[in-house]
Image (tube, rainbow, N blue to C red; front, side):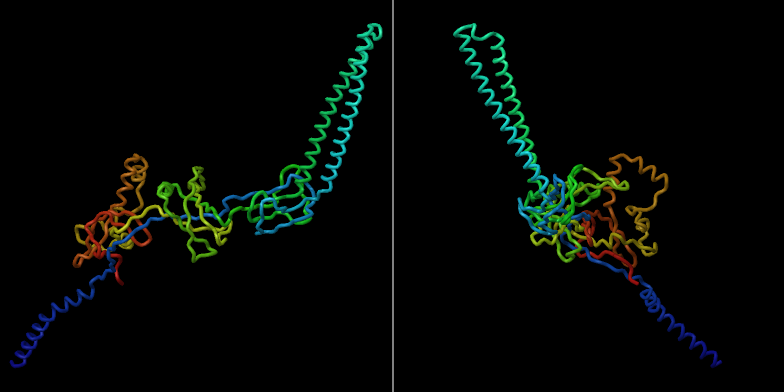
Length: 421
């Protein structure tokens, strides 16, 4: 009997102990299995939107210098990267043949001038004979017959014609001489502008053949220190933003691989309307002007460009990680918000064929409205043991933050960015 009583008392004590330990144990297990969330605060600050692109650095002007005459190169006075001034002799073609042509044409011109002098002397004598004959015939008609007078008259006219021909021959010889002198001068290849020799395509002793086309000998780039151009290709989807940025005179920044720790400034100088289509992708050339006082920017360098296209100041900013997050367990979300768990209100997802056909047949107004609706998003905040969705309307986006244009959140509120492991 005593053993039974002892057993009852022990069981009773165990039951009481279990009753007292149940709630703490349950709370411990609940706390142990409770999900912890990574959160970030909504901040206040400035947001700047950029459009990124790549481009190539080129001189503002590249002057190609060729030769109009053919022959061996007997003198080469410049090399790559040399600075030259307008009129400097860059190279010289062997001038001997062209000098011989000048000598020949000078002799020809002298011959034509002597011929003119001879004809004019004969013409003066013929005129004197004509005047004498005319005077004799005036004194006595029988002194000179009509035939003799005709001979004197037409001799004068013949010599006058010969004088015209001699003068024309002189002009022709003078033109030939001018051509030969010009060709002789072309033997000296001179710089038409001040600049830097960025390319040299000939070597000493090389023979030029300019009969069919003008060979390119040098390329000179003037004013490399004053201004350079960066040629960027901008996608057609962003060109409207670039146009607005140009109208607002917004700055452009870029870097080059040669100086990765230095940021260069520029400005949009030109947006060209000549589009380029490559693999069904349409781009537009945008020309950026920049200074180059230290000659760090060289022709052909690749630039990584950032166009500032829009900005806003002193606005609430949501971390982009919060906009990308959505829960992966429906039981962690309030029942009223569970239909948003997959981000279906805004997230891009595969569409059925019917949906594709429906989107393809949308009007321009419907497409614009659909694009505008993409700015309506949801972020998640901790609400007790569950997550609550909060609707927000977003604005400008940058690397880490996005502007909150509308929403029932304020600066300092915490939004969920992920689940802690």
